[in-house]
Length: 425
Image (tube, rainbow, N blue to C red; front, side, top):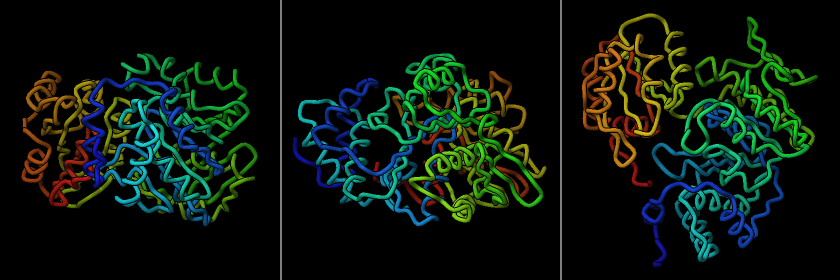
């Protein structure tokens, strides 16, 4: 093929070439990894889980950076620009570096087919190996056991939470999904779980491979006080931690997972508690109950499954009581739409339902119909931008607008606020 000469061209090429169904497995990635000799010497921390992966990666990146380490971080999906996915020392990779990485992977893969995510993961690792940071944090794309990120052995692995999502690929029970997520654990190496009641399959797998499992309430403890909070990881105590920059009660479990991972890695990557405090106080991740405006209060949240919707409902309940809550809502068709609506149905006064692009996006009329079937007051719009504009017109100064339902929903709302979507994928 003709080699693309821009990042946009590369992403278009990969998207159009990989419109086939997702096929999970590590053989393809491992084969291309071998051809590229991607065998890094820097420590790896892998983060999986149904929800909270991106936030936990942000806490790790911020605390390690505050301690003076040069970090690499790979997360997905992005919101406005693909470059967000690959960061070195906190800075997104340049278009030129990403193009060079994609070209290197393309030349090495030969006849081996790769999905969009697989090629992106290999490109990120190619960039990291060239940059040679002190430590790399990798976010799992989906599941864990057969995810492309799992082609590399983690020195420490974190599973933030286990709940229902991507059931068509991972199974339709927490037990099945827990086993898939536990696949990122490695024999004899630290394993962290932020779920206070993880499925037995995760605990049993960790025991079967002799991974050193620590979890919230069993080895990792959070204590709140008048002047802050304390995290205890076995015998290590990290006191006087600050209020987190990212709002939401659930964020403390994510932060504790990150602290536990650093506690387990402290011989190789010592992080002083003052650096932890600085990182926790500054870490941010766009689209996680992100407040983007006042009067009316405007919030963006990527919640797209029932577990995340329950957390979102809790965060909204914690807000000072003022006016109405108005939702800008769009989802992918293969998600548990009623399961996402249910925790918020009684709290939201009006829903502005919008369509997302096919083939995966659910059309606005279908979404509005399902909202009304659950007793919700809903208006239909063709696109998220139109729904956002309508919500802003409807809302008074004391009201709250919340845009949620998908990464795509948040990305389109962000683009509407910033004057247009970036062209980088």
